Image (tube, rainbow, N blue to C red; front, side, top):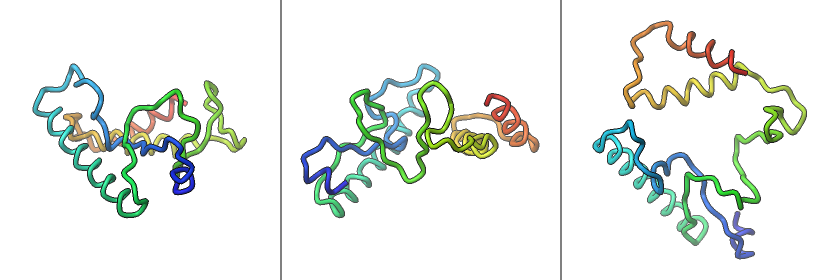
Amino acid sequence: MKQQIAESKDVRWFTARAWPIGVEKPTDWNEQKFIGRLLSSKMAVQYINDWSSKHLGVVIPVTCIKDFGMITLMDDRLIQVIPNTGKRADGQPLDRLIVAKKIARALDAYAWMGYPHDDPEGEEKLLALIASQF
């Protein structure tokens, strides 16, 4: 990243933590919920800006919106897939259970949005449902 900055390349942080900055309020969200999430995302972006300034010497723009002009996406957990196939570019099989668990964990992160979590078998049902979609 430092090399790209030195080469004056357009570098951005891409993170879900920046959501919903730059997007409209979802129609099914009330104003209080949206403002709470917006404040949380602004705090996250400020933390990223502070870190970026301290460790990279510059503040890099933060976004949660993919850009069709993007050339490269770097991530510590990213696995490249072939567009519109669902197949890994490295030829390795896609571990459906791992993907399902990651999706379930992601959905669990949104439990605060009001989704019910009182079903003790809910996680297993959710994992089975998601796994059946692959």
